Image 1 (cartoon, rainbow, N blue to C red):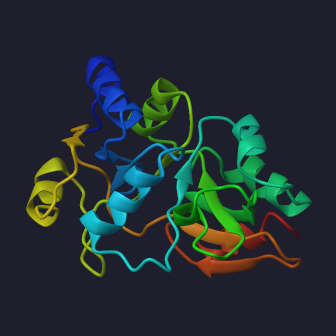
Image 2 (cartoon, helix red, strand yellow):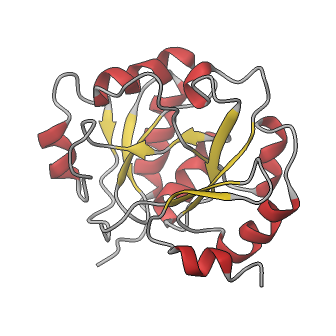
Length: 204
């Protein structure tokens, strides 16, 4: 059963991120690790918490397409078509990154991965912070995704995130689909919960 957002808990989580903390929170697939994209120290802590290789960038959640102006140089036409069809939802688009973004968001790729979540807790969290947050999965690198608060606690212990926003269990299953729209034609980098056939159906 999906729990309705608890806005007091969401505000608490947003306040922790605002002060440079890292939190775990539910998304439409699994739990993610959230930090303000403006705080490089917090972003680097995610790599330590996850034991994540530093060459892998951190995906981002935004609350509105207008937020892209702070993150990307341009939005290709194919990206707009995919946004219209699948956002909010588990589709991450790789877009041309602004050069001034902190390194963990791009990891020397010149691209940034962005989506709008269809999970009410996650979307409310981005809105409460007033800016984009990271959404990399809240698990140890190469370990199974976490689908509830207890699984997050079991996996991420040394060190743990500063706070776990317990929004109940998530659906689990495959992660978000990742599509690189920086080139034409676009490239499907990771086929996740949205399958390749549905992506390609947008461009008959």
